[in-house]
Length: 217
Ligand code: HEC
Ligand code: HEC
Ligand code: HEC
Image (cartoon, rainbow, N blue to C red; front, side, top):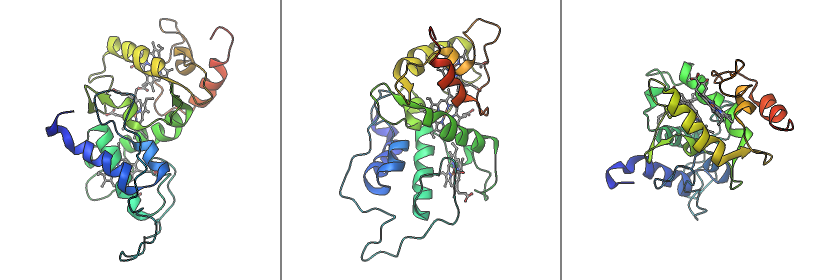
């Protein structure tokens, strides 16, 4: 990564070493270098935990509400901002990519997609190395955070290549089974039942678990 592209990287380092303790950091670890799937995992550094009371600092503020999506692992209010900056850095976007200005609570289509990623996709997978999956593990292009990893407008040929060489090659199910195209897309590419649209659908868990374990799958 070039020095000029250091913003996302700095965020990632903060995430790993300063902010959040083990759980959110694992979800949000951002690659430090150009390799898409071996991101710098959170380094256990003896840095202050924003959610732990620390002498000389104001007491950590409790969460204002319960989150079930991208923020599900936030433990205190300070971590909301930390996780959000991490997500923005991982995808190489600004806050307004997902939020309407002035109202972070308002729902948007991209917030829904981000929550779907966090709730439906990420927890079903692990890397082939057995580590937890972070947004940045998929959301990288040429070493930079990228939202539209399948290109925009979406490129079908590239989608097939990315699915084959990145998704299926470098990830597996949480249980360690290999991923197959039809495990997520309901049928093999080229057959009539192939479902191209998955984001927003809540059937991914059933699919990955039932179809992947079918003999010959
Ligand atoms: C990729 C999309 C995305 C980006 C980029 C993003 N957010 Fe968020 N943000 C979300 C989602 C989704 C939620 C709700 C999380 C949940 O429900 O667990 C959220 C929630 C929040 C909340 C809490 C709102 C509430 O309902 O209480 C705040 C504050 C926030 N974001 C701030 C930010 C800031 C600041 C940035 C930029 C540094 C940012 N977000 C970037 C998707 C995003
Ligand atoms: C296993 C791979 C993978 C992981 C991990 C992953 N995503 Fe995605 N994400 C995708 C794919 C594939 C798309 C479709 C990209 C496209 O249309 O170019 C996508 C699209 C998105 C989009 C829509 C982008 C757009 O502009 O249309 C958002 C927002 C998003 N992901 C957020 C997240 C967040 C937040 C995380 C971490 C909680 C995450 N993703 C983790 C694979 C992943
Ligand atoms: C872990 C689940 C998963 C697996 C396994 C998977 N994909 Fe995907 N694939 C996705 C997601 C998520 C998207 C984005 C879908 C969306 O936009 O709704 C996608 C999108 C695509 C698209 C673009 C579809 C469209 O209509 O725009 C193609 C083509 C594709 N995948 C092919 C494949 C192939 C070929 C394989 C096997 C080598 C495969 N996928 C394996 C999750 C998966």
